[in-house]
Image (cartoon, rainbow, N blue to C red):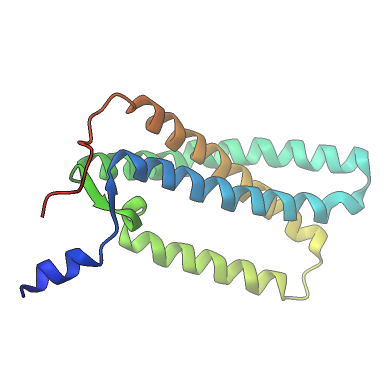
Length: 158
């Protein structure tokens, strides 16, 4: 049995356009988790101050998305569009993206377990959550835009 045949048996292939949906879901879920945690931590500031902090976080998140993350999203969309009609479900992000995900999760865990007051962590959590939510919308938009594209039904070619 050829090695490529064996590896293809264990590769969960899906139509390429669904990688856009998976990427959007991954970014949206991570963004929601961060926003919920961040906003809960700044709640202690009182309603007025909390709204000001959250509004500022939205502005900073928009700027960060425009300056850095929009390019990352567009590169990921372009990479997904270059994949074959059927691709591994885990290809919704590039292989090095998994290292970035691991690093960001590790940093988040380290910050939550540090002596830094939660109120100060709420701001960057809210900002990063907002960036991820905006990025997820771009993946969802691209998924909807590719609705008419044909990914032949059935199984991927061997």
